[in-house]
Image (cartoon, rainbow, N blue to C red; front, side):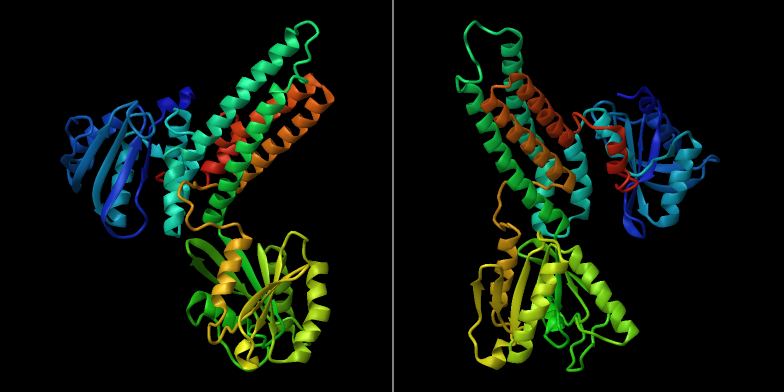
Length: 457
């Protein structure tokens, strides 16, 4: 624990900006009790609600409300904490906060309350991040998963892996340092078996983490295609609203349009783009340039083709489809959508080809839209009925992948009989997993994480 953090008392408004029925000013630190007592001119019992007048330096009432005292270490931060619950007006909260600072507190930095909870071992790093993810969750599934992470579900699974890894490291290092005569501990099979078990459990945690990251960050879906293929109609059909203007005039959409929706709890960031074609119009050229930029950062691209025009559909398949493959990264999947099947009499369907998925639908009537929604969930590995999932971030996935890579290298060392190299791979795997909960985290990483939090958290 950092002694400087212990001595310092911070204060912040813990409720959202604006007007509300209740506003909260929170204090944490060694002087929190004294500041709260001076402000209310009374003593406090731990974990009791006290109705108080909040007074200025001259004894005049700034506000009236409830004061709560949580003594160290039995508080969220592990320090003495005072919460002042007053009327939720901006001016009232500002006056209370200014009075707290006048009495000796300082303004808290973003995420500093959660950071102190982490530094005082009240929560680990994954739980701290779950607080911010719970606040920013946009779906019910996201809320539930963030709550499970906050309760320690993700941390427990990582801790289980680390315990097994530590046990294996102890066995391997002991075998290296104290070898028994004529016994090859790598060849006896126990190390390989334990390594395989850890690798299997790590794969299960990684799968859940990918689902958790999808719930947190959502899927970026870019709709692309020629003018009048029905891109904006498809956006409207997915969102269930008239988000985009739809006309028979080519080039109606000249800029990027964004809509944030969800499919069975999976957040979806849908981007409608300008029609891809050669154009002398400078504004349209800029729109097309932005369309390619959006596609380059997509999780998936929908190439919309006008199925009612056989010549246009054939041209898109022969030219636009190869162009997307050429310009986009190989890990960005492209799904071909044959739109306007209501005009061709074709039955809505989904077909898996060797290098693409083709979906026939009608954005105007909605026929086949459920096929598209299910395809989007499946392609992202989303399971709406995940009962024991948790929220996760990109850095968690990176750490899990790094740990997996170390175990793969470790298997090679087992096969080669290189015990010392195996011990190093297990050590690196242990360090990668430790980054998730903060057991092994650089100060720079902590600063980056907590700086993105709300001030009062």
